[in-house]
Image 1 (cartoon, rainbow, N blue to C red):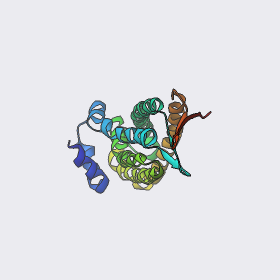
Image 2 (image 1 turned 180 degrees about the vertical axis):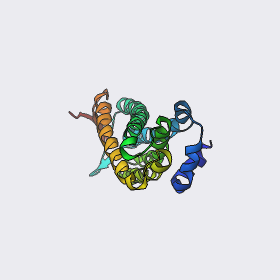
Image 3 (image 1 turned 120 degrees about the vertical axis):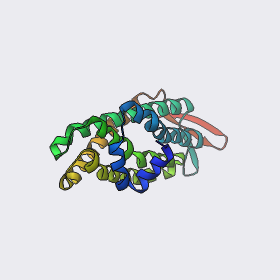
Image 4 (image 1 turned 90 degrees about the vertical axis):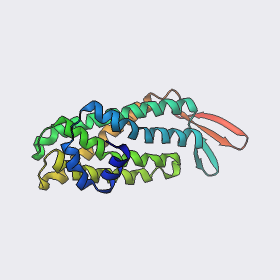
Length: 206
């Protein structure tokens, strides 16, 4: 599988790409090593660069997360995002019969891995913290990708696809809140590095 080509195909022509994905022979290890480990690195690395190296500017004051905190947060968020895909895939698989679909753990993982492509790509906006909100638009497109993939991978009837998609979205939001709390709790230092001309202060945030 060509990584760049797969990204282009799933983003530009998802309806044509999902049937091909459904027919591919794959396992958990290959999906992670050939695809997810690269895509998940985009928001993690971009977030570190944006918040710890570039910083966010507010009213003429530049604020940056301390480097140590930023590095730890990058690693933790990267690992947790990989884990989140697996957990959501388990939820998708478990929910399949409820929405008239067919259980398949590997197809559920394919759905979440490739369906999350746009969301991971949108993480590049974290390079400039003021543009990070644009990543939300990319995440919304990932919801559409998952919607188009459900009938092919989980054999969900068309009339139940919307409800299935909404349920997955809710699961994703809940998981995101939980993992965000875990990530925040594991930060070695809470705070922003504030640079204002010659001033270079550290302030703690409870």
